[in-house]
Image: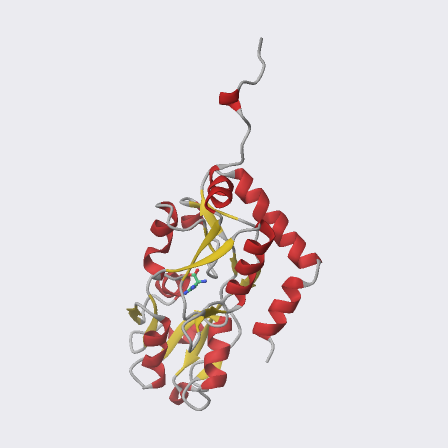
Length: 246
Ligand code: ARG
């Protein structure tokens, strides 16, 4: 008789199971990436991703636990189980998708350029930067770094551990350009008028998605249904307006 016994009790996939048992949703991100995740003056984490993560935890009925992680090690941190998901403005791309699963995109961005004001008018697109006389700064391990290597390979590339250090290179004249996700650049340019010029038209196509360990379709199903719900019930738009419209 093929009846179910106690040892074949049907349970959720491993990630949802651990969230339910531990009573917490541990979320990896890398603070400093405006407006998705920032550290506020009082030390708490704020931003678009943080607000979405908090709603997710609330709907699950568990505690939201922020796990601030250096970008370069964020996938290994996920894969060793220190967080249940990455919610950090991560671009969905083939290389990463071979190591993690992504939920459907929650927003689409692309790389844009912050220029040294002296180059205004001389450089009007990423193509003009493809010259050995130019130095470009970006953040280690990002799609900005990948785009520069792929599309602007003649320029000199300087990578930095944090986006704050990288963008400072342009503001203080040590680099000709900084290349990074457009929303970050738009905010930085508005806060640093006169120090940088924003070429705001994105030159890459980058859907951002939440990443989880591979092989857990229950968690993937949860995330995609959660995304559809917040997009439909107005909470996504409310949070979007809070962080993207000023
Ligand atoms: N979208 C870019 C990437 O996936 C940059 C993301 C940086 N995110 C962060 N939390 N610092 O590489």
